[in-house]
Image 1 (cartoon, rainbow, N blue to C red):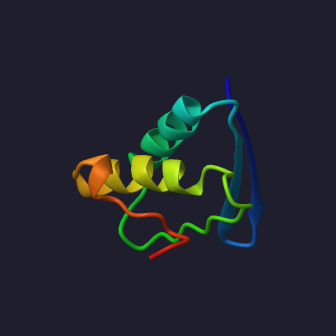
Image 2: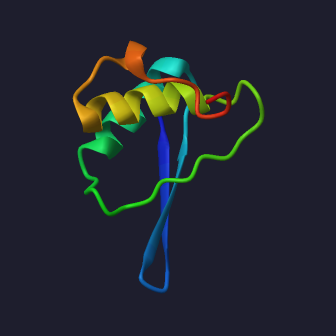
Length: 77
């Protein structure tokens, strides 16, 4: 399963998630989206093929209540 590491930098909460599969990545993103409000900021960083698009699709589709197929790659948009 996934591992969540959380630390606090001043008033900012920093979390790191480790996933073993695209399905876990989408699940992590979906669960995270349920905890967010409109003023929070998410930054994704990773190599090509790291799972940024899979994560984005899970996060945005849950938060915005749209189909994951409507979410484009954050790298190529």
